Length: 328
Image 1 (cartoon, rainbow, N blue to C red):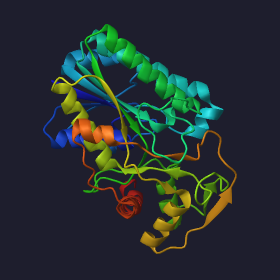
Image 2: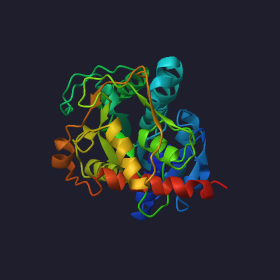
Image 3: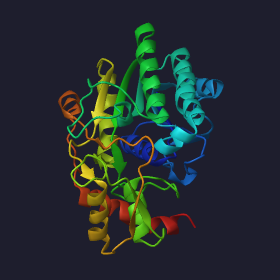
């Protein structure tokens, strides 16, 4: 039996493949390498170049490798881009997921873990948001992910498939052993952009919006170390294997940091007074999204081990320093 990791050559997916391989699991990585890198795939995994939405290919992989579980990361993730190009997001996220789920059902896959997002909540206010909050995504990105959540719920009601959804908040950092990190050159993640600016890889960075109803006027987000996030995936997979019912869980720390606080932390860790220019708000950005994350702790016994902004920034900066050498 094996686990199929879609998007396993990307940032978060590559960390999942590492975690599963470290545990002795048989892993198949499927990635089209549009934003991923083949060198990011752990050598212990089987890598297949292709689309997660190719039902024939996925069906063959399920049969050939005896896939019993799928962990689905493949998709597009940039909120402003989803506003300007919504069809790309409904194609890469919703339609691809629909085809992947179809292949899973036809191949009698037992469990399906889905990478969702806090963007399904939309405008949330400053207080932590729980899983039972109203779902009102502000962007096509958030809506495309929510549609997949709905599809999974409907399919699980009709077929013997159990699923787990993890709604991510803001993922950052890198593998503590230096094996993987956020490697996309023009990624929009705040911590990566700030680290690149500190290292002179960008002339400056932008602070998008300084008039939000937050303590310092900039957006507030719940930043989670990628290693802690992946541990939640591993625990969720174990929970489903043990007979756990389908579930949806937030995955964050329950503590928000503003854009200014993050930039100041990067300055402190790097020792560099990086240039940050104030710019207008970006479309689709809510003022604050912070996780109400007690359910994942109670249900899975998840205990974060890296919930410190300075540690997260330090890991991201170290990876950014390593990456130009790695990519030669």
